[in-house]
Amino acid sequence: MALSPLGQQHGHAISQWLSNTKIDSIYASPMLRVQQTLAPLAVQRELQPTVISDLREVDFGDWTGHRWDGIHEHFGVSAFDWLEIIETTGIPQGESAAELTQRVQPALLKVLHDSPHQSVAIFCHGGIIRVILALMLGQPLKNMAHFNIEYGSITIVEVQPERKHAFQIELLNYCPPVS
Image (cartoon, rainbow, N blue to C red; front, side, top):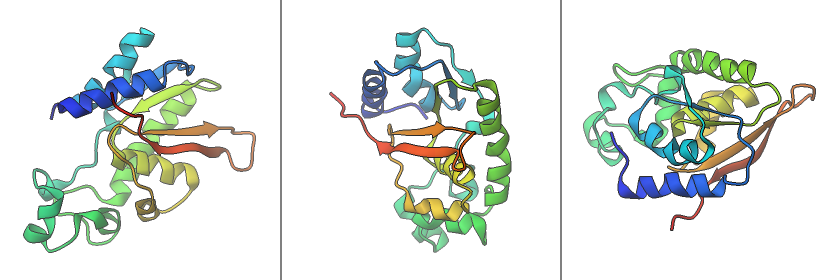
C-alpha cells in the first residue's frame, strides 16, 4: 500500500527533523510505504538503505484488509488488543507472538552487529517497533500495548552495551510537525 499525501508529508517532516542528526546507515522494511517514508532522508543523506525483509509488518492473517474498527464486527474481538491476542489465542492465519519475535530478533541483532558505535535509522512499522522495544527491554510483547506508536513517529534508543541497562529510550513516539 502506498503512502497517502499525509504520509508523504510525514516522510519529509522526519527528514527535516533529523537533518542535523548524525546517521551512518539506514535499515528498512521492504514494504512500499516504508520505502516512501525513508526516501526523503535517504536522498538528503545520499544513503542507500539496507533492506531487511524481517522488518516487514506483522502478518495479521485473516484480519488483513479489514479496518481496525471492523475487526470486532467480523471476528468478535477488539483489534486494539492484538498484542494480547497474538500471545494467547492468536489471529487466524496470522503470526503468533513467538513467530513474530523469532522473525524480528535476528534482524535487530544484524543491525546491532553491523553498526557498533554508529547512529542508525531503522524505518519499519508500529508493530515491529513494539517488538524491538520488547526485545531491548526484556519485556513480554503484550506489555508494549502501553506504548502508543503513531504513523511517521520517531523513537530514539541509545545502545550502551557496557552498561547494566544497555538500552535507554531517549525519545518515544515523537511526531515531527508536518508543514
